[in-house]
Length: 139
Image (cartoon, rainbow, N blue to C red):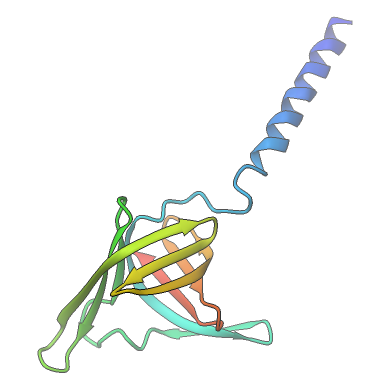
């Protein structure tokens, strides 16, 4: 009888732990968003198939353009451009917020919201409303 009670208690504990752990985040990834993210690829989805290319906005011979998301919800967007001076860095500051799997940025008064498709410790993959995909790699 004691063994049955212990087995029942163990089964209940496992059931409670399993039922709660998968529902708490509503599909939201728990990897940290704050960090410096380098743009590596861009693309789109056509008929369910992703087409990605190396990010053409990255200047050859320069560091990669980036998005630096700070813990205090401020951000810096970095763009390397060689039009006037080789690998000149132009930065814009703004703010960001995250709501579930949406990332909203406000830079120079322009608000943009993208879906977070994938977020791991090393990769951030986003898609906007028109289907444009951007893949970032943590610096």
